Image 1 (spheres, rainbow, N blue to C red):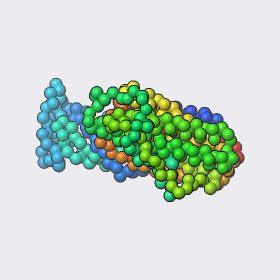
Image 2: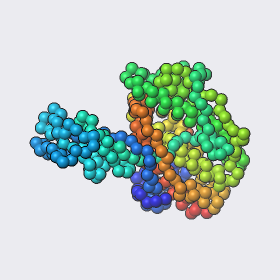
Image 3: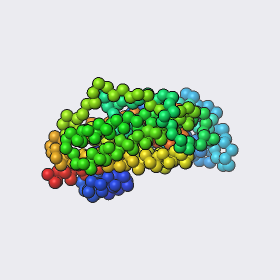
Image 4: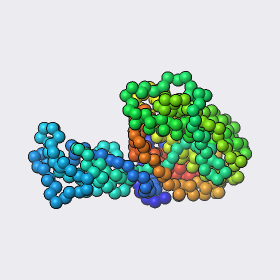
Length: 385
Ligand SMILES: [Fe+2]
Ligand SMILES: [Fe+2]
């Protein structure tokens, strides 16, 4: 892990507090701060700055003479706001852009590049903070996630009331159809993922409570898949469901407890914790009742799945000792946020956050929840040993 940021463990978010409580650990146990890996994501996204937010002095206008940056134009034209004279040129100073972006809740990681000026706005491209993909997918023999193709099907889009489309633009509707279809495919894949996880727990003699929770999680993922396919169907304007799933020639099970711990950390303790955190952030911005209902269920269940993963790690550390501890440390040491894909549109009221917003939530989850809980768990089990 590379040092990037430090937070005191007594200022952890509620999800971290809950996970620590589940593990019987106190939030202040362990080191006073944790390290977070510093990653640069190649994905670039757009930032729009309204000159009304720029620092300026009323009555003075920078004509920008001699600095006709590419794409800039219509400099210094008034915007009708009394006593307001926008500066002629878009800000170019990195620190200034960072501060302005932060003020509108966007976080820049990497040099922002001015693309053009659009009327009263400056458009930049920048690299946002991004993070892990989420969920607990079924992995094939080569370790790649398997998802079933989405096809036209009346079997999965249930009779639940759909979202209200009256204020959704065509662009948003297309983006929402794509987003909820992808979520549905991931949830559907998780059904198989949890069935395999239950088999792995059985094969290593795990306590019945963990096996039972894994089986329950598989049913919950099935419910999530149905809910997401129902939402996707409404946005797409046609009933959607999964095609037959190609599970591969074998369903490989973990061969050692250390291997199980590593996959549980990656796909469960990280994947499901981030899933719960990001879904909660999406729910916070959701206004549509049908989407809100689906996200309420998903947030509650994904939080349970995260607890199951962390409890499994605790059990594995207790019975597996040093090799399990090493496997967990290895995953934490190579923790690398994945890309968040650029999106055609955002529609927070319908559960679709802007890519940068989602990336920021996922990054905060890794830094403020996953790593503190992992550090506390490793320290507590070492002390016990
Ligand atoms: Fe799920
Ligand atoms: Fe889940």
